Length: 352
Image (tube, rainbow, N blue to C red; front, side, top):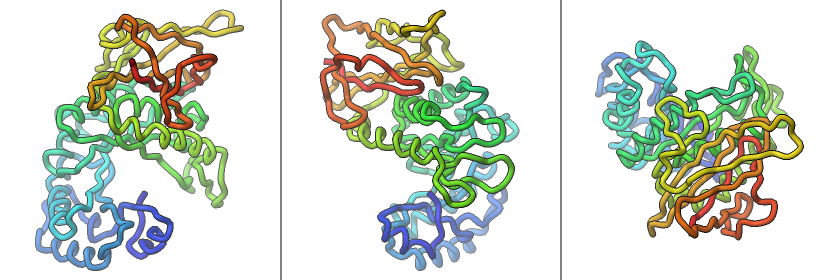
C-alpha cells in the first residue's frame, strides 16, 4: 500500500514494503511541464529522508492520469531512478471503458503503452471495477486481455487492482467476488493483485472494506485472507509460467477469444445436481507454459452464484491432468470430488 516517510520504521518492524506518498514526488500539476531543477531538489531531499529503508519499494506518483500528464510523470520517475536506483514509480491507469477524452489517446492500447514508453515503469498497473447487479461485466475481461497481450508483447509484467469494498452501485463483497477477481487475474498471467481498499472510506456509501470506518474487521477481512492464502499457495507455480492464451465459453467478451481457439482444451462440460432447470456454465480457461515447455491450464468459473461439476477434455490424446492444490501448492492426483468448482473459483492443472 501507500504510506508516509515518517511511518517507514513501523513498516520495517512489521516486515512490510510500501510505496511512499510524499508531495516531493507527487505534489505537482503533472499535466503541465515541470521545472527539472525543482524536481531534482525535491527528490534529492526525499532520498535523504528515505535513506536505505527496506520498507520503501518505491513512490506513489499518480492514479488514473490523462495522457498529457505522462511526460511530467516520466521526468519524476527518471529523477527518482537517478537518486534512488531500484526504487519503483507507481502510476495506476484508467480502465478500458473510459472515454478517449479522459485518457487522451486514440486507443486504450496506446494509453497503456505510455506507462512503458514514457514512464518506464517496470510493471503495468490498472483498475477495472465491474461487479454490478450480481455479475461481472464484460469490460473486466476485456481489460485483462488487452493488458495481458501488451504484457506478453513487451515482457513487462502486469498488476490488476480489484474491488475489496462496495461503493456507488458496485455489489457487496462475497467469497465469490473475491475469488473471481483473483482467479481471472491469475488465469491471465498477472504478477500482482491489488485491492481497493483495505480501510473503508468514510464518505458516501462506502462499506464492507476489510476494515470498517471504526477500525473493526468486517466479514470481508476473512474473505480476503482466504483468497490471499490460495494465491500464496499457487504463486510459486504461477510465477514460473508464461501466459499463452485465455479463452471463454460460451459467451466471449469484446477483444477476447473463444474456447474453440484453445490449443490445449477440446471442451469443458459443466453440470449441476438437484437443479431444475439446469444452469448453463460460464467459464474461462487460461493457458500457460513453463520453462521446460510443459503446458498448464487454469479453469475459472465465471458464475458468481453457482457451483459446477466439470469435465475437461484435452486435445492431446492420452493427456492427464495433474492438479496443483490451492491449499498446499503441491501437485496431486486429480480424483474423487475434486471436479467441483465453487462460484468465482478456479483450478490450476499441469498437463502430463
